[in-house]
Length: 367
Ligand SMILES: Cc1cc2nc3c(=O)[nH]c(=O)nc-3n(C[C@H](O)[C@H](O)[C@H](O)COP(=O)(O)OP(=O)(O)OC[C@H]3O[C@@H](n4cnc5c(N)ncnc54)[C@H](O)[C@@H]3O)c2cc1C
Image (tube, rainbow, N blue to C red; front, top):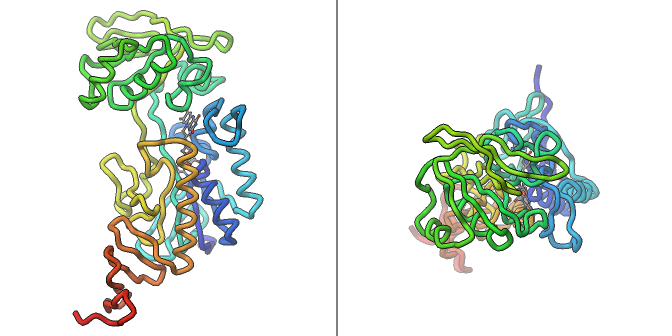
């Protein structure tokens, strides 16, 4: 059976804050974006609406003075994108070909031809997979268990409480240090007796009087109830095999994040952790016409507002590209939809046939 072919000027992957912001901007620019998002899948951690769907209070998204629930905020994003005519498709992309434009994205029954592609597939916090960790009502996730200290640490539920941070890398040290601003005490629980974190992060954590460590210890279960929230963790000493209950009032799982970039391996430039590379001045990837925004290209800020900000940038970049205006590429050169390259020093334009033209009024440069 041949696949239905859809042709679109802008295709966006992902409906978190980055993807939906890109949709709002490109829809308002009459580019009729098609937003493709993966269906709910707990194993792959995909949820239309993105990571904020698994949290409760969002207190730091500007514009909501009393805070807003994560799913409610994402519903508002979506309604705004729909209002300007964004088309939504909830399906898995099985194959992607970025070798030539229009790019081809294949789903089970469709081949989507995209003049520009905005990737906003986000990142997933790594979880331990232990009882009590899942989102409410299966576990206490969002009710005393979190994977984001910057996001949830300041919430009243964690203030002046004894908290546990699980992990031994930079993320864990950063989260533990940050949490000491609000918590009474923070205990880092780590499987080994040394940390993987960088020296500077370790030193900072060791010097902090509010942080202590439980070494050679695995957390096996998060304990608590809906009424009381988290009351403790069941732990096992990996040297003695002894199990016990450690009392605490909140758990932050800080074992890292994984960008959702499997689909693009071998086609787009990524850093050593698999995050897509953009250039900081624009959201362009190494392939002209492909842009990335949000957590899929940012392992540093990882906030809804920064994801939305870069979603806006990617949308404006795609718009410029489709208007044949130059967009800055990661290597510093600029490129138009016609394939004209402007050198990083802005001195020359390399035409698609290889002809080198001065970017000054005088004309062709003799090579
Ligand atoms: C527990 C928790 C609480 C948080 N609280 C806050 C907070 O209070 N304030 C704040 O600013 N930030 C918070 N954050 C961080 C914030 O959620 C993220 O920074 C933000 O959601 C990133 O947005 P994004 O659009 O880049 O990606 P995401 O929100 O991760 O969305 C990615 C989208 O891509 C889709 N997707 C993934 N893979 C594929 C694929 N192969 N094909 C198609 N679609 C795919 C997913 O289904 C999802 O819709 C929190 C994060 C967590 C985990």
